[in-house]
Length: 344
Image (cartoon, rainbow, N blue to C red; front, side):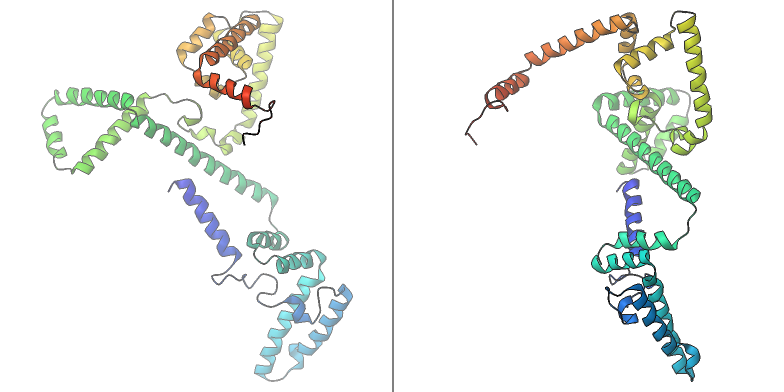
């Protein structure tokens, strides 16, 4: 089970504990607990606010603790008076009464009742809610990116091409270390004490380390950095906005007003904008392909339009030569939406 799955599981468990007890009933602090608020006051759901208030006053006078003598009678009266007062607090307010009626009509909607009840009861500062929400999003974001990166590394470890290359680099490193002196014999002697499972685990860790150090993973599976999480991005937002405004002013001054030639960074930006790719998507393109874009001067709009037409024609040609696409075209011609058949 992944870390994210564990987090979601614990959240569901905590919500379940907050929503209901082990026997499936609501917690005692929810409205009137196990009792029915209407029955406590001797009224029905169709009763008006005046009728509810009248019944409450009568019952309050009847069960007021000061009107009873004796310790036991006084305790019983006090408990009854508390339940009656709680029921009246629930039913005297229209919003609270509607929420309670919803609970009676939908007893299994645990989380909806949890939200409705504490929405009115809890006076939470909106700033605290924002802080907690951003913190949760940042944690999930960071954990998810680490999981994606770990998935990418494990995928490369499973490919023979990269695994064999990493093993070759490990062998070269061990050979160089072994030729340095008697330390290699001690290392070899130490490894003989490990079991086969431990040796395999150690070997996989070495391969993983080599791949992490030498593999430049770009895009959505890139190694996460602390600056990528939401909290840090919000903290750096003024700097980011200022840097963007400076970049726009510099672009207008140098290339719009002074008509200076574009540098490499500006050329790549124009190519990426014409291709409608994000920075992450463009960085994932092979360096050789990017250099080819520069040689073709695709930052010039006319050159890019010609290149795009050529790419579309080449793609159409490849699709026309593809047997699967030919079969699909034949199917659409004979059985497509423009033809009525009775084969089915």
